[in-house]
Amino acid sequence: MIQNTCAAQVVRSRVLLSAFAILMACNAARLADSPPAQIPVPNPAPLPVDKHGDVTRTTTAKGTDRLREWRGGVMGTSLQLEVLGTDVAELDRVLGLVLDELRRVEDVFTVWRESELTRLNDRAGQGPIPVSRELALVLATSIECGRVTRGAFDVSYFPLRSLWNYQAEHPTLPTQAEIDAALAFVDWSRIEVDLEKNTVAMPAGFSIDLGGIAKGYGIDRAMSVMLEQGVKNGLVQAGGDTKALGRKFGESWQIAIKNPRHPGELFAVLPVVNQCVQTSGDYERFVEIDGQRYHHIIDPRTGRPSQGCMSATVIGPEATFADGIATAMCVLGPQAGMEIIEQLDRVEAVLVGMDGEVHLSSGLKKAAIPSKVR
Ligand code: ADP
Ligand code: MG
Image 1 (cartoon, protein in one colour):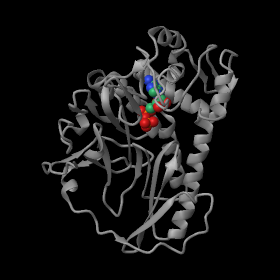
Image 2 (spheres, rainbow, N blue to C red; image 1 turned 45 degrees about the horizontal axis):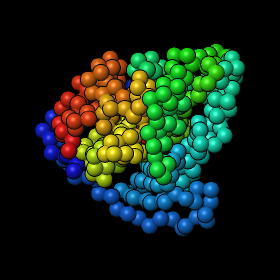
Image 3 (cartoon, helix red, strand yellow; image 1 turned 60 degrees about the horizontal axis):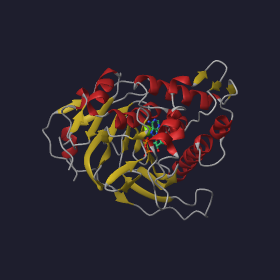
Image 4 (spheres, protein in one colour; image 1 turned 135 degrees about the vertical axis):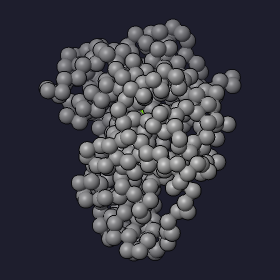
């Protein structure tokens, strides 16, 4: 159910970012407006199947403006890229660079095949290990997320991951002894990132998984590529994580939040300009055993799937940080989570507690969002 009936107040967040004018346009009135006319125009002659061949492309036009949209997959999730300009071939060139960048980032941060990250994990306990500047920076942001959320976000949670195997044909539950054994190797504060030397050190037995933050970083990088190429209006969306630049045919981008108990439905739509919207939830990957839901976000305090929020949407200027914080909100729950959000500069949140109650941060209080998810 898309909620687009709301009082006609205009609510704008206090958000401003020097790099580009951040406007968190919770413009309730705009939601009720009809969308701009978008006329489908024929795609240009089909390209031969190239390295981006698994991408579906569409073009929409308004006047001389063209919106080029690519849909495909990246980082184990659905990818949507949208970019506006006047020359479709030029837009395709930029989108190709964006896709290349997303795939490059995936190659650095994946733990599903050999990567710079798996090579680092293999050397845990061997003192400071030289890493790329990029990996050092993302790890530093991860540690910062751990500090801000008092350990709810913990990239060293990896030893717990194999205990909760949602992919198994007949998933089983780990014993408390197995959880305790893994927890001995989980503590974000013992990962040392040296940003001067670009090294990372962690105790023997530790291992890092950046699944809770790498997608946000990929989105930040993808948007940087768009900006470098002179794009003024565009969108990068990977699963529930989005970064929106400028506007879509002069209107705010409309970013939907899924109903966490009916993910085919939406429960809110945020009008967004120059902003990131990162949603984490217990509904993306889970298995039910004896009526209990076991999902992919782990509470590092208990070693068990988190019980804080069904869904957490974090809005902020930087996708990497917002992604980590959104994952942590699922652990912390609405009360403890919102206390942290309120202390963060330029960050807002929509948190759905386990009872379906919707909690909005102070900058969103008048936004067009229902108070309960059913
Ligand atoms: P999604 O990948 O569905 O967008 P998230 O951004 O919330 O969702 O990330 C979930 C992923 O984060 C998990 O699949 C796992 O790789 C990792 N993760 C799980 N629990 C934690 C945690 N407490 N701290 C850091 N990362 C976590
Ligand atoms: Mg996350």
